[in-house]
Image (tube, rainbow, N blue to C red; front, side):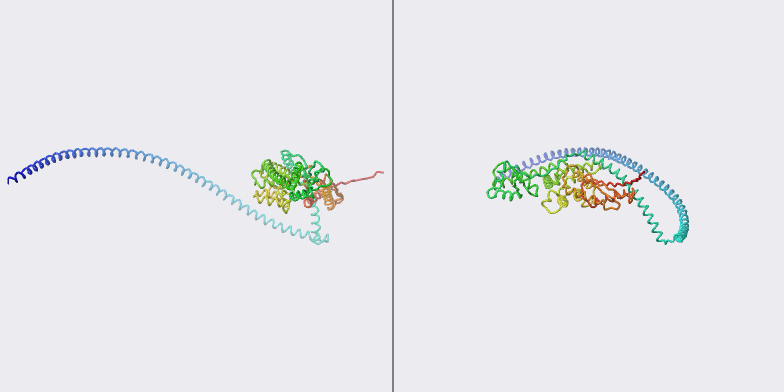
Length: 524
């Protein structure tokens, strides 16, 4: 028992002390927590009150802004409604004016209808009167015909033939006089206009009248060089002819060798090659081929440069590079002694100036004139005329339709479809026909004169005909007892048409008909 008290009693006391301390501290912590909760409650209430005040303030601001925006929207709507009302009122006024105009037109139409009805009534009455008169006229005509037949003893058909014959003679004379007057008037106006256009074109572009030919003659320093050109057993001349594709003519002509070839480009290359070989003195097959290849490249570059220079000089815009090279080949092509490239440039400038005078596309006219003879650059390489080959090239390189039309129609093979094609044909004739532009053989010259005179003598009433002015004019002397003055004008026109249909010639041919009446008496 004592032991129990000694052990248990301290433990109990210790427990009581612990419990007392725990209760004390618990009570103290509880008071502290209650105070904290009380403080937090006060802070929370304050925050809630502040939030309520802030919300009320925001609410008032939002209400103010909404009212301001509503007023703005209302004002805009009022303005829009006011403008719309004004537009509607204006439309109403327009409709009212239109209705008023329609009413006026309706009134006018009704008035016109009334007038037309009255006119129709009068017209019907007039038609009835005319029909009655026609019936009377027919009766009178029949009576007159019967009387005429009784008096003249002719049938109706015979009388008609006589009347028609007289009318034909009178109309022929009147037509001849009309043709005379109208032809003179048209010639005067056309000549004046053409003179102005051509004068302006020629004045703007003038070119020297130089007849240029390709001379394929190579000068030699001495006749001994001929033997070196021929070579041992003719090997050098055979090599030259096979490599260059030309024929060498070595005759008794002193100090010169003639190169013969249809291709002007190949002939020019051969000429340059032979000149270099003669100057260098080393003439052998390997050297011949080497110099020929070098000259070929140089001439290719020169041809392209000539084409580019011509295109730039004429000012025809962008053009296909292959076509530029073909244009450059025209520099080494001649036609009747006239350089074709110079001729093409001249035609381009003349056509362009005339197109500008007439208000047409000057650049397109120059392009058409520049390419009108492009087929001549390849006509010695391909089958066909230079016109057909030119059309084929222009089509291949997608040239404009006007350019193709100008190429196809510049010699009159087909009818021109555009004004520029007609100007190109005129410029081509002008360039070819000017003095000194082209050379012409004596046979062709005589043949043209004979053809002119023979055409004139085919017509009735012609006594003599003379071709003068180098075939630019034909004068016809008619028999005065067979043709009168009016018929002479008609004869001149008929001969002009026959010349245009049957002959091919550059420029123009003047037809002059001369009728002379002589009255002679001898006094004794």
